[in-house]
Image 1 (cartoon, one colour):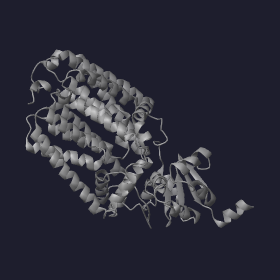
Image 2: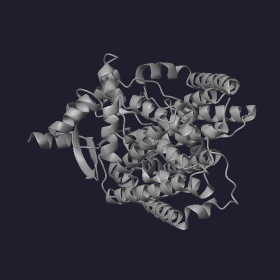
Image 3: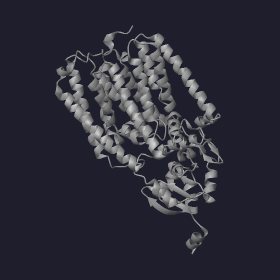
Image 4: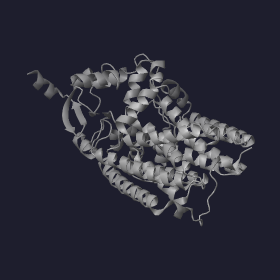
Length: 512
């Protein structure tokens, strides 16, 4: 049976423990997180105003919301209206579609969900740490320290489901962490875990951690209740997806879920994860290293399976490695590692018998936050190929009013124009043409017929390396040649290359 010695006990807020650790660690940590909050507010405002986080992946998620607003739930892989294909689960874009139905603008409503998800995530971390016995002030600062990672900053400004899924996952753990357990809280945890899974397919590791921890601490009956309730809820979500899409979702995920991976790519997942984190998210690397040091101490204590935060970090690392074994994985998937690292670092100090440990944890967290914040400032204006300022109104103004469809690498552009984007995800077009013979031909025929009013790309297809990208990674073979033979460059706005059809007059002028 569970022993109270295996977890941090609740603290008496009126005790003198806060004074025992001294004011220095608390002041330093509070100063660090205050600076981080200000930095986050400034950075988020800049990114929201410039739409820098609206990458093509975010555009896919936003487009699925506009589809659902028009009562299209998971468009077919291909029909007369264009191309579908996605690996996204429905909760995030369904919430977005609801806001669109209520009259909110397209991009502000997406930012609202992203920001609310991160706030919900921080509140979940705070609640979980409090359940684990961490003092109010340290639990609050630990939750805010989450913002030190670049992946979390992206979740604020990049409309994707990672933040929402992580938040619901943590809230599920928070419901389980309180002792003694009762059926009502277990069923509430099941609801959170189900919602987390319905937001992101791979968010199942929180449930696994909860089950292992319940069994290890002697609550086998509660573990069975959680497993059965969540499995039934998963089945209900799956049935709703199949019914709502008229069965299309089965074909879609059968074709797209693997992302075209193979065993060599899967084996390289851990190395790719480390490389991506080192290149894009130094703050996360710092917190992960510190958390791994703590994990090593916990592992040698012979109580690993009874330490909920340690189990969560192990599960988050394992699942993230699996995710990076699939092509097309970006840095947003590193979010769960930062979440688990912050929880473990905060919970490690939850021992009333060791004020020295709490003082040390406070200093380490404060220094880690400051170092990570400096890294965020350094890279504040360094946009990558995926994240850079956009000027969508100028792009649409250049294209002008049109009854013909706009083909765009980022589907948010035709969505902003009020259109039903012809291609939902260019990467999937290239992937599926390897499985479905001639899958890309309708797109190429439309290009040759100059059926699009404009084609908007994120790079210049006339360059050899970029042309290779479009022929092998995005859209597929023949795309670049069909475009350049039938369309001419009209304008370049930021990193959006706008092509319009070659008219008879321009064609004859070119011939002369």
